[in-house]
Length: 223
View 1 (cartoon, rainbow, N blue to C red):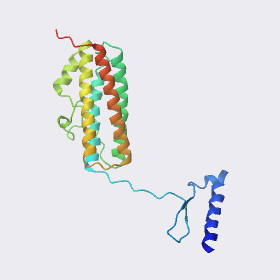
View 2: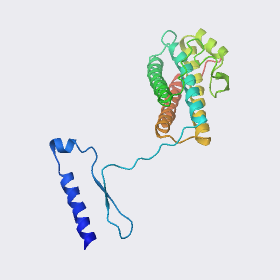
View 3: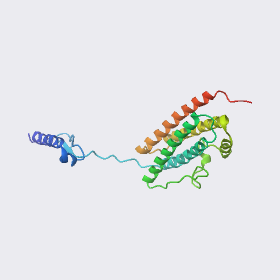
View 4: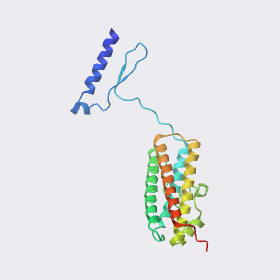
């Protein structure tokens, strides 16, 4: 009888608290929840959900973020060449969207590093990477200085085709980096996982678009 009375009192409290409105409702930040008690025990009235500890980030997490910032930085170097060299309408539009997407992801990755009180390595304007910190040559999909120079020297259809082909390979490299992190010592930290999935999705969508534009160009001129 005592347990029944106590349970009824708890339920009554839930009804009263759940029915609050106006200032009283605003003063109650969390909806009361009944948590089942142990066998033979009364339920417990909770005012907030139990917190779940975030996993600790790993060295692989941090390396991935810093490397991907530099990797995205090289893509920005490539898109910056498009307006003065492209002979098509679709390539500049694509490059502009890609540029904005990669800039946004760089910002989110820098915020993630800052949140964890880790050094935010700024992009070096000349190399597109982080001078003295990140070895761009070790990253998959990164184009060489010679390829970048050839792209800068090209124009018209030659430029458009080269830009799209190099960017496709660059995006493939980013997907490889994502796969390597997931297969490695990835912490599973929620915000980073969401960001990685966004990067993965964006690269795949853009690669599909690149294939469509390359197909519309027809075969390369062999002459």
